[in-house]
Image (cartoon, rainbow, N blue to C red; front, side, top):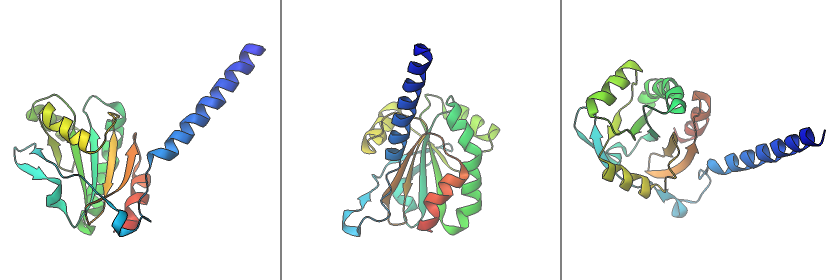
Length: 176
């Protein structure tokens, strides 16, 4: 009896801690005054076609920068939702930008992207380049992690963990 009660207490405490932590994961800055907005760090990486692309090239658009990897099951789960958002909201100025944390050649990532029908641009880089990007975003290494950037280039939200289309849309619709 004592063992079962103890397990329930540990479970409740753990779930409470997780729920409290998740509430801190989304750092909504929509109500922050303009002078306190945090500019999203700019970076330049390669597309799967070998072109260089900078985040600043997308100024004027709402951007979801999604840190992911081919080997990450939660990352794979959110790919269809991110692809639909990119396709359905592209005309409204929304861009999903995948940043691959794989240590694979571009053609291997490209094959994965084709198999998973990814509709948004995928960027990759050397380990050194990716490390610089991760540090600039104070990334803690969790995959997937998605950063929401407004049309002015400000970091508005950070989502750690896989999310669904409805969740992402709730975060970007006020920015459209």
